[in-house]
Amino acid sequence: MFCSIVPPYLLRRLAQLDDRSLLPVAEAAQRALTRDAAMRRNRNVKRAQMPALPTLLPSQRIRATGLNPTRQINDAQNMERLPGIRVRSEGDGPVEDVAVNEAYDGLGSTFELFADAYQRNALDGRGGILRATVHYGEDYDNAFWNGTRMVFGDGDGRVFQRFTKSLSVIGHELTHGITQHTTNLVYQGQPGALNESISDVFAALVEQYKLGHSAEHASWVIGEGLFTDQVSGDGLRSLKAPGTAYDDDVLGKDPQPATMADYIDTTDDNGGVHLNSGIPNHAFYRLASILGGNAWERAGLIWYDTITGTEVVADTDFAGFAAATESAAESRYGKDSEELKAVTAAWTEVGVLE
Amino acid sequence: MRISVKRTGGFAGLTRRWAVEVGQPELRDEWLPIIESCPWDDVPQTQNQPDRYMYRISAGEREASLPEQDVTGPWRQLVDRTLESARQEEGRRAESGPKGPEGFLRDTDPGER
Image 1 (cartoon, helix red, strand yellow):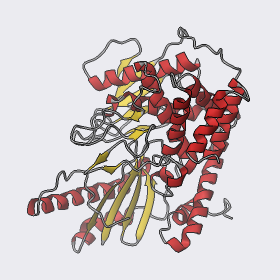
Image 2 (tube, rainbow over the protein chains, first blue to last red):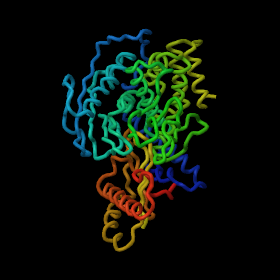
Image 3 (cartoon, chains in turn green, blue):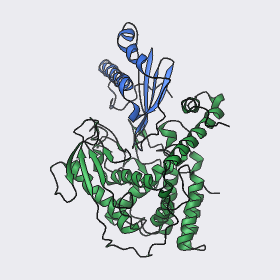
């Protein structure tokens, strides 16, 4: 067994061994790295951030919550320097720059879902400022969460358009901020794939809530509208059918698995966090479609209860997360509820529960 | 010497690879000073920020993996130079050979796993 005495750089080396005969070593090192990262993380997590079981929310959604966002949009002016200059603050009217307005509006839509459906006041639950920077870098084909703000590139114009163009990208990045304030899942391996999946799930719900789409009518696609018309694809990921979002001569085919049978072991991408997220993504989709109606209501509430409860911690894996969603469904809807049965069925379909 | 960069992750989760084969005297004069100043055995253990890229950089026998935010200083120089050289090579190949559908995202290093 690997202990902390093995220096992380060595673990990292071992974890990346390509020699198949050394695979067990690589896997063990990977596990140790994940655990060490979790421990390092845990040391930094104030226990105060792990709240006691939340008191049950009213079963009916309250629309007029009286909660309002505080947004700040900055412009990196195509440099890789953060935060950039402030270009729009809360209450300011639209500006000429469409990326700034998309970021401002997208932050608002994301805030609304969490406030209206889950009575959550911003990322930290205390009305903290929502920060975004647009025009990061040159032809930058990415968007990310840096621990404080969401950051958007303009895309290269050939494959990707600007990353503010898709509301689901904004919802995804902001949800990383919520994860940071709740489960604080490490960004590696299965906990990392859960971190990614939680961002995709709530990103899809932000769009569905804004459009008024029920589970049956929603696209369940993340990153719709990001590709230029030269790319064959609807978007980057599909919760409904992972592995089918794009199939393009240049980009290749969407590599996401939908079930544990196709789980991908890799050291790339922090242990495949954007790949294996397809599995919990599909479990959420299955839950939402079994229950029917608006996915942000019962399915979304079970997921929200799960991430704000105490069962999921920094190094929780798929099975642990599945068990936590069952606990959340049972607490809210009861032991014999159709919601709990649907949760179990969804995780069983994707092969996480037997 | 073979120098390669593999970039994984990012919001899109797309993998890109670039590689160049550099001979003397270019290697000695232009590349080795950068390669030698990269701290190959002292890669920081930072956890990646959500949706940022992961880089796997190799030069000959040396290899390092690091998150995007740590690709600074000589690492960044090495990555930028590799990307630029790989693209120039790709451009030259595209001019002399048959035109592909879209050279932009094609891997310049299809041989690597």
